[in-house]
Every structure is written in C-alpha cells, then in structure tokens.
Amino acid sequence: MIEPSQAVVTTPRRPKAVDVAEARAEAARLGCRYVERRSQGWEKLVETTGARAVLAVAHGDRALWLPGMTVPWRFHGGMAVLRIRRMIAGVEPDPFLAACDVRAGDRFLDCTGGACADALVAAHAVGEGGHVEVIEASALLHAVTGHGARHVRFGEAPIDAALSRMHVTLGDHLEVLRSLPDRSYDVVYFDPMFRETTTAAPGFDVVRALADPRPLAAEALAEARRVARRRVVLQDRKTGGELERLGLPELPVMSRYAQVRFGGLVFA
Image (tube, rainbow, N blue to C red; front, side, top):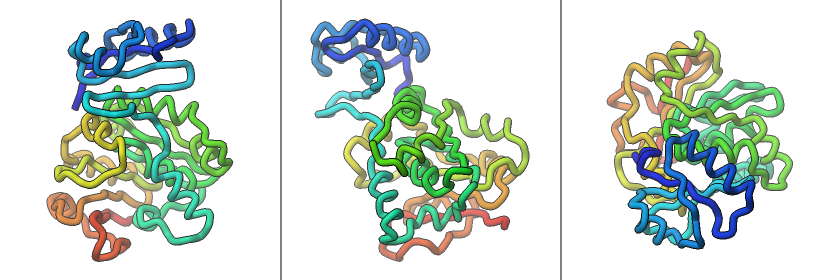
C-alpha cells in the first residue's frame, strides 16, 4: 500500500492558475509534496523526486500514475457502466446485486471502495430514494474516486443519477463501522483485495498497489453484523478460503465456472 508521503502531487503540463491552486490544496490535504510539472513526463517526475506514485490535479480532473504505466488512471466507471447498461436493457441479472439483495430505497454500505465499480452498480439499483456510502482506506485512491463521484459525469442520465447517490468517505472501515448505529444500513458489503493475482481490467494494478492489503478482520465482520439490517456480504475468490476462514456460508448466485463467489449473513 503506497502512502501519501511516498507520492507527489503535480499538474498538467500546461497548467492554468486554478489547476495549480487545486494541486497545492490537494497536496496539503494529503500531506504530499507538491512538484511543479515544468513539462516533465511521468517517468522524469519519478526519477527526479523518487516518488512511488504521481497524482496529477487539474480543475475537474484527478489522475494517478505509477512507474511502468503507459497511461494514468482516472475514475471512469469501468465495467460498472457496462453492467448498468445491461441492467437497463434487461439482458441478465447482476450476481453482485443478487448476492446483496439490493432493493429500491436501500441504504448500502461498501466498506472496501477500490475503484467503486460495485458501489456504482448498487447506487443505480437503490434508485432515487436510496443511498450508497463507500469507505476507502487509501488517501490516494480516495483523492481520485471521491472527486470522481462528486464531479465526473458520463452524459447518461441513469448513470449520472447513480453517481449523485454515491458518497466516498476516507477512513478505516472498522473505525467507521464502530461509529455507526445498530441496523443503520440495509446491506454491508466487503470486497477485500484478493491475495491471489487475478486477470483484471486495465488500470486495476493501480488499485492493487494503493488499496489496503489486510484481510477482513473478524471484528469488522462482527461490527458489520450489528450495523446491517438485512445482509452482510463478502466477495471472495473461488479458491480464496476467506468464506471458510470467517465462517460465512456461500450464497448460490454464481455459476460453477466463475472465478469469484459471494458469501454472507442473511437476516431478513
């Protein structure tokens, strides 16, 4: 997990005054060094600063770059956008939504935000009367996804409406769960970083490098059980062993050929 102290904040190559002001403010908020771009490429910035990550800030945009990447990573919705389109078209049910039994009007808590793909799908499913809260432990990831949820829009009304129902909070999920009242969310969801390397969408290497690598703690699961009204759900690799470690029964929503599975506790 790359910490903010190991990263630098900069601007586009030809920044406007507003870009510089936002970059400086973001660097101060994160506790990162601010570095003037001076038309430097990503590799040169890393070479001259020794940083392990670069966050480029512009007015209305945030991009993360790690050494070895060809293009920076931005909040783009990814597969969530395609999944929502398929839901609207009625092509097929989404196994994640089936596992979580997401309903219109739900309050949904995603404790391991990452790229926020599942959270965005949930935000579409809960509808106008619902709300999705996302917890992200990485300050650098949160700088991109939190900004994206507030400011990025795709020009597709259902997806943009879903984004408006999604709020991304920076914090440790155990601490946040401890602070919440009993039965304050309908569903509490965990998708911890898999210990095994998986084939993933382009850019997921950024999420893997920045995300909290710790396995889900039994105490966090106990707090989630207290907070949830209807379900606590965990996503696991098919051979990950996390469901068994935590004593969670598997939910029968995936085909036997799928590489992931869901397990959880059902209360109502």
